[in-house]
Amino acid sequence: MGEILVIAVIALLVFGPDRLPELAQKSAKALARFRREATKSVTELKKAAAMDDLDRELREIRSDVRRVGRDLAGLGTGERTTTPAPSNGAPPIDPDAT
Image (cartoon, rainbow, N blue to C red):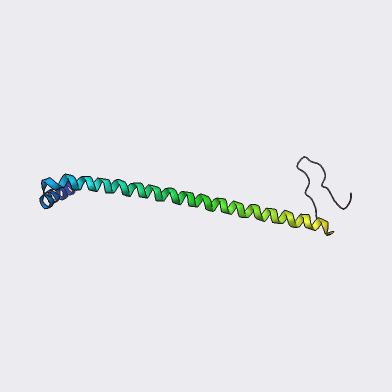
């Protein structure tokens, strides 16, 4: 607290009592602008991080689609593929047996 008082007294002596309120007002506006810009930057960084997560999920979906496409293409070429058992307890389906 004492340090702030010393700085205020020095500022009063250097700038004078007429300019000190104006400088305090400009300083407050600059600080408010800085805070706004910092908040804006943090928000943009959060959005970018969310976009990275979405991009990762999209790549995983594309990979899954390609794998399913290869599996389906393998059915037409006579390659034997096994279909997993349905979750309702029914036996697995063998496309070559039907």
